[in-house]
Image (cartoon, rainbow, N blue to C red; front, side):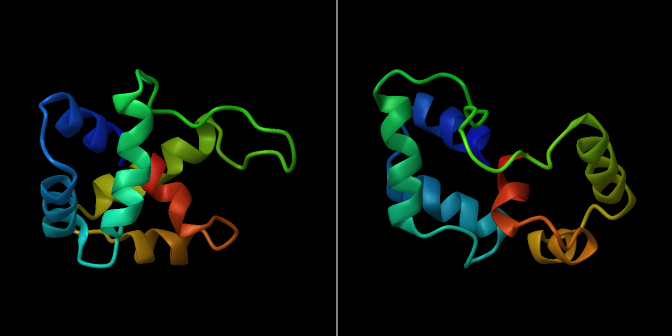
Length: 100
């Protein structure tokens, strides 16, 4: 999801239009306009990395094996939803799938 936001922001697409396009593709309730604005701000400030930065605290469940499993599920059903992936991998928050 951050890759999409970064791409559209680099093409100088307004936040409201980024939100509209994301909602059109991923569904109405995927991100609020305020959340899109929150994600756009660092890119406007020069951030180029779309991956989450390491933080202290609980270790991440995201690793290469997990990404491959999700990739396999997505390729098996191109009409997937974030909710269906979340149901498929219960210990993982829906927001994690938006960053993959």
